[in-house]
Length: 490
Image 1 (cartoon, rainbow, N blue to C red):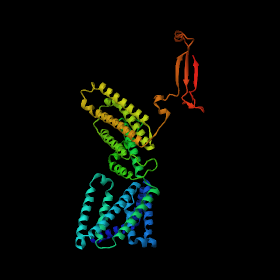
Image 2: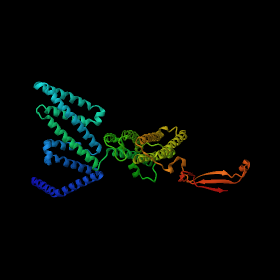
Image 3: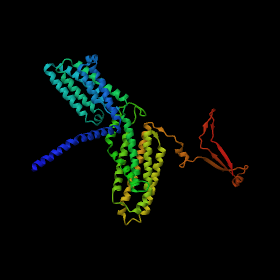
Image 4: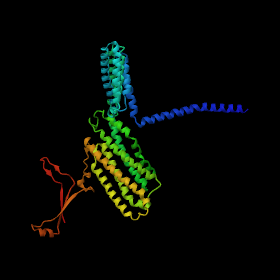
């Protein structure tokens, strides 16, 4: 009886699963479609790249579809298709790197392979395999050893791999065939055709430049630093203006910077292969991005320390925090504004050193005020020194961050000169106009009554000369006209 009941339950469960299968299948397919759509919307360039690869494969397939081309290259046309598959990369720099590496490595290895075959045949039928074996061993081992050198590993590793493969194939296959030159010519030609098509499609059809990605990535990482330090200010010194959710989301933005080194190194390496384009000249200083990115990463490490103080339960007494709150808030705010101006300078490729230097100077003034506040509060807190250590350490970390902001600013200034940034000529930011952006400049002098200086000094009358802010202009006769001047006698 129990067995029949179990069988009925299993049958009912099976029928229920069978009944629910169409709806589950529909939900699963819908979920996958939405995931693919979101993935494509996150970066539409992925869809464009896929279309570009398909276009390149279609073009090189003409070597098989068109009879005259097939008669010229034969089955070696398959190497063109293979070249498109392995050479096509997401960025122009990646495609150029692999394409040029493959082309030159194939050319050199093919020439050496043909030469090795002819040299081996001079040694007779018995000596030919021995000579070929020695040459394959020597060049293969040497090329493999060269891949361990950092510079070759970074830029020519793929070329060294193709060299080993091509030389070994040509040298070994040449032992059994007499048409080695024809085979080498067909394979080299098809590889060059496939690589050329990939490079042309990558450059001229919606190109994706590795240099631009690196440029934007470094600028965005600096903005993340600015958001993190402003979020820390709102979270460690909470106020009614900022909610905890807003500060909590912004203070964690630095975490992605800590793991960005490999991506930055790869983009910088690929950017060196790219030709001049847009705002980037032929010999753009790509290596300077790595220097700036390194400083940004070191600064982000200090944010990890600050984040520990935010999450820690051990905090300094509230009365001590209230004494250091103002200078610390000023430091955070000014350092954040300086980082935003630095990021703006990189994004627009313009120099904003006046703004940046002003914010850094204000941060340093806040540091002096912080030191003064610590000196004044030290006698009161001498007995409870252990309690204020977290607050003092937090303030010290902020000082280190300001120091790194200054280093980042200096590195960007050096980079701006090499990259030929345009000068931002904003009269309101000119130091000659002062910090409060005066609308007018004027002079005050006594009215001269006669030639007697004593009378001049005792005269109650004063002349106020008000000069308009308009800069001097040049007339048709190249005569400098002074600013408009109004005289008021009091």
